[in-house]
Image (cartoon, rainbow, N blue to C red; front, side, top):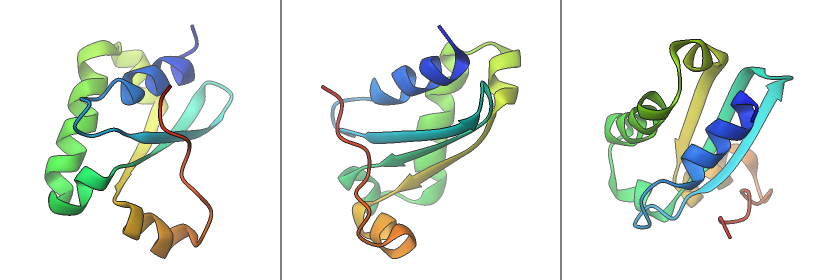
Length: 94
């Protein structure tokens, strides 16, 4: 499984209370940028959101794989609309 696929799987497996919508961009298996959108993020400070997602990634990825992840946006739906307009976030996990 590629690092990008592993990152996506880890983020989609965040706790059910988060119910994340996850999308990723990358250059092959490098320079991975993730966007995680959740209603639950609206009531959480940025630091808590970031600790949640980076903690989940660090628990599952190797150091080499972690270096391939450049950034993770952690947004509420409202913040996502402000940044990206009406473009919908990725569909929820099935």
